Length: 378
Image 1: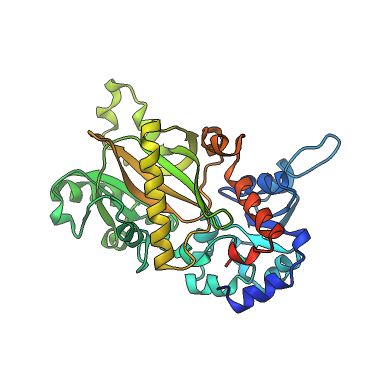
Image 2: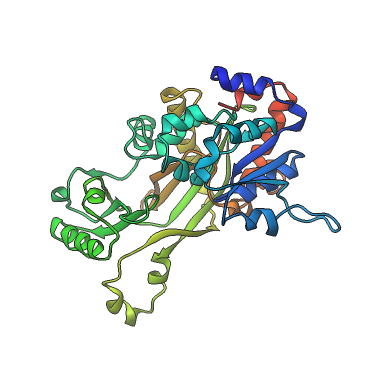
């Protein structure tokens, strides 16, 4: 059931003039493009110093027709989005808010998730209460949801002294609050050596290490399963699959063998740099859908109405026989890769390539035209 304030806002909207709105980062261009493809308006909230991508380079223009961003709203900082005047402006534009990872990161630097959920009067496309599940210090987080769904995920270690196999350590970055530092090790002694190396490099500190997650390192190629749960159709879709490009991990991977020893002391950085399309062997598709279906059911049980729209299970495919998925991370909102449209799965379903942004817009149009908008927003 919709929160009373959100329900009142939605009831006052002009359904013929809906606007898809997102924070200007991560996947905003995909949302803007998708809105235009389905005849909806779009608005991108930008921050000073980061506005030109949306207000200039991809702004909609005519003669000839080009660009996809209809309008921008520039703020001094992204976290100003919760200002009551900003909320009123967005509501006056009949905005439906599409949350991305940047929205979570930048607002959570200033506000708690409770404050974000209460302060956003604009209706969310999707379940706003699931966003916090991406944070590892939340009680009903992504790992709890994976366990509830019976989905295989890496074994965890309570302390460095328990390490008895190759593990990845995920610690809060010491200097950049929205990033994590990563390192691999296979014993308590190696943990201490690597941790000290990153401490000297300024990448971790005692607080970050104390709260670090230590998990078994799954060996295999990575693939992100980008799903869409449609309340309008009651069906799960695989919109596409991709993998990440990360600094400086990809650079280290491309080093010639003769240089590997000289690079042994360089701390691995796994900052997001981009995504590339990848595909699955067709024999694995049924298993992929099974993971998605189980996760949808678990999320609905834990936090009704559960998943609405896009989510991603980030996986490693480990060797068999049989090969199997190990889910190491979950995205409970629009994923960061518009390249998923260039894998074949949305075309197999819809007869043409459909981006995640356009699929969101399609769901909004279906809900609007059937008088069911309240079923896709929170």
